[in-house]
Image (tube, helix red, strand yellow):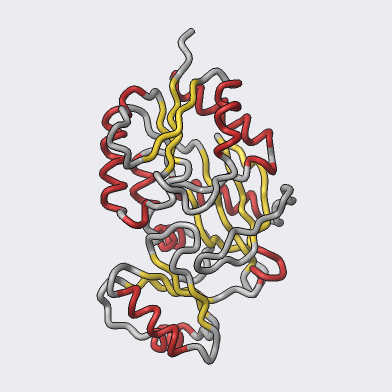
Length: 286
């Protein structure tokens, strides 16, 4: 039987190491596939030669989102892309949080502010009854552009929001204290099953990511919120990561639903790595 060719997609210059990538080549080959790593914006890549293309560490897409989506459209026309094009289109912009909320999935309260809108942070904070908030770009990766604005830091916060709105859409959200004591949980879903959970520390700007070295038990209600979020997506998925945290009432809320290029923390759960690779090979030959 011919071995399927699976291309995992990265960027030309990684802004930080990808802990998953060193594990993928051997695991995909063990599962019966041939593995290639390629940058999404490399014009020399023949995407049609792949049986399956899987975005994995395209962590610079936010710098050129239109070009990235145009690339995804070309790949989708040439071969199989997972996660699929419609999911990628919907997930690159964090307005998807508001779509989740409309579908009944609890999220971190979110104010979406459009590029060029003349809105002051003070007016948002007053209308929402917030004090300690986070500003982040609506299209972003890692923690690029994220800034916490505490009481007393309003002047800097206004300037940060205004500068962001001059170039792009932005989100304003309340800072949830539970990210410090309880910690954010990343719930990993592979091929129809939630496989593992890790604990993440708060991250802003260019700070390095800090996560638990081992998998941790999912929080109570974790599986239910993952199921609800993915039902709302309603599409074929190979992988997903749902980042959650308790709100002040103790209810789990979605901070991010990562369906394009999330770290999946395979080192913390080797069984999840094998599941991912077996599923990729199976879908590449389907």
